[in-house]
Length: 413
Image 1 (cartoon, rainbow, N blue to C red):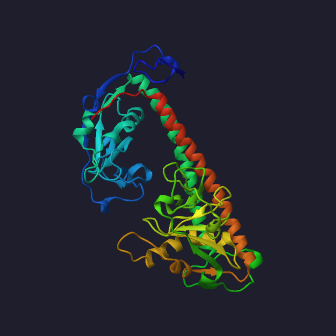
Image 2: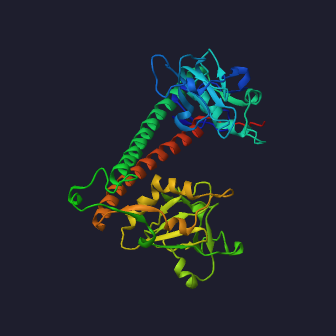
Image 3: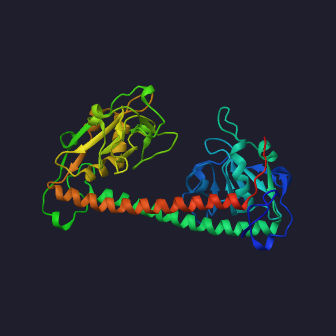
């Protein structure tokens, strides 16, 4: 692929065999496709697995598996493009290969001349969300979709781009499946390495600890040092990154402290009086408010050490326990389920310091067993992190490729 004249309606990157082809033409989606939609279907009739009696995939509005909801006995369309018309995923566009059924939250684009392919689906997807209405429930209805303008190359160039994108999507899918396998592996380890409800020993125990006796099931209260952060006034929060970073609940997500120019805040004053609230490497931090309370748990790395812990964020250090073992416990679904039970707020979900201290876990008789378990789970976490980074890099590559392969046009509603 080589660069082309940016003043023409051609992409920045174009396959060599199409360098001398005509410019891409712009047309409305409705002039190229029959614009229709799916039908209501009771999910009771849909099977989770593909069978002889239910061979056809059913697509709906879910984000998982690109909207795959299960399998059904009948199909509606073949080799078509769908998009989500209603809800949080409105405007999400996908090419559907082969025969399929789709529900009434899916719009469908049908073309018998080969224009329904991954190339055109990606082109429409690159602009469709700009046309979603957010008045009430998000919507992108058929009439609006019909009027969206996109650039169309000739069919052979479409096919070339589609083949390129499909091969990249296959790699992304394979890497995504590897990530799911690693996550399932960790889930299985958690179920086997920790005693289940009503039990005092795990299903699997490292050989050197098999004769060490039962675990003690108790609250973490006496094994953690927990404080919540300091209350700073809004005028004390600055965007000037020359100050001391402030660790807020918004910075904490599932297993990670995240950063961006929009969310990061800093304190420009002296921090001597705040020494108690400065986080250290390997501290556990828990966001105590928000829709994902119980899930937003992370461990402080060296790059985040020294940040100021702010109000409604809990900081945990270990007492006579292994901190990484405690981290795995707070990161587990057991803690999430516990938070769901104790959180009775009718407003913004939250958890108190006392409720965190009251969380019950199993403690092996010897700290060395905690360390062995934590080491095993942490090694899997490292693999998951590396695989997730690999997947994110592929997705960034695809995004950059799309920007190069597709010319941009002014596309007003």
